[in-house]
Length: 264
View 1 (cartoon, rainbow, N blue to C red):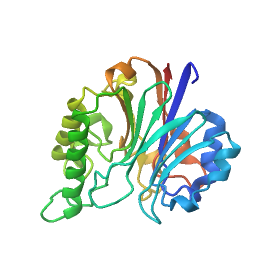
View 2 (cartoon, helix red, strand yellow; view 1 turned 45 degrees about the horizontal axis):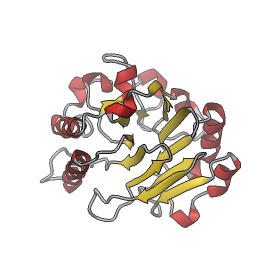
View 3 (cartoon, rainbow, N blue to C red; view 1 turned 30 degrees about the vertical axis):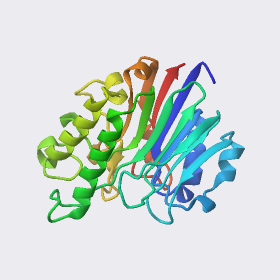
């Protein structure tokens, strides 16, 4: 276990389509562990070789063809593969491991929730809220030192979106979603590392829609991706940043990576 541990998290939006930019990111940033969401590939088809060439010999996948999918790729040993079905329908949206230092690492891909913020009109929205509720019940009994990362698909603070007023009724920033995520955070005193190192109202976006012809000019971003830690682990964190330049690379994901460094 290195004395300094660097963990990256990235919704890659199809890992096979983004291999060149993932390789570039790993060479430039040199994390010890990479957590991916929305890998969109069956475990048997995951591009393991390129990661092994870069030293990520410890690999755990939870994937499905063309949809969802999460993975943890590590230069250091990882143990105890766990997969929670917080969606309650078999979708591949979580994988968790234990590091040799005893810290748990949970990688989560929360459902987007569709377009209408009403569970009656839009069952996907209800599934998203139920997913967060199941995470909350798990969190209440999570006693181990833990880091939880991933695409939570909720931007909780007013400064986490380009326009709080215009997005209040848009899925990902509605009050009911924010309340659900707040209950999750409070259930185990999770520390939001992004806002710990970059306090409000500082701009801190992680996602920009593909629909924007020039994301840099419009900058209509949202902070949908998060890294949380239990207080004992958060006390070990020394740096957190969003690798925003990745959004401008060739064939980018609509999300960018987050990186947190810990002194273990």
